[in-house]
Length: 146
Image (cartoon, rainbow, N blue to C red):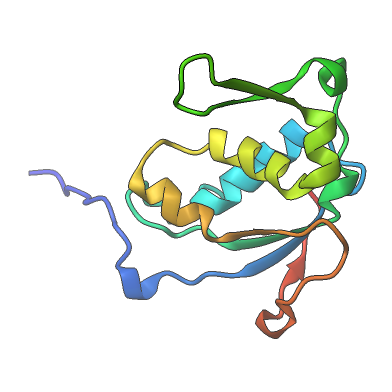
């Protein structure tokens, strides 16, 4: 009989999370969001387990300086509905970038995660700030270039 190898699945106590700082200044929105989503899910780790929250924590700074390519700055709109008849509301991405630049990155990353309870937990590991200051110095975050 052959030796049968079993698939290793990490236990909750074995998961080690790191903290990373990402500077969004001059980065393209979609490309940055895909790399952040990969790290949030933990797919960059060799011991990746799809049904566990094993991704790392990410702090994004300078969210207001993100770059949009092509005609997105004029054409892209965010959709919201008031739940009343005729209650469709569209907001241009330029207006959203001025008022709440954190939302733009949050929305892009959220769209790249699976639609499940686990993804909602993984989104809590993402912290986004418009400026270059953040209150997470105590976690000793590493700076990574994406």
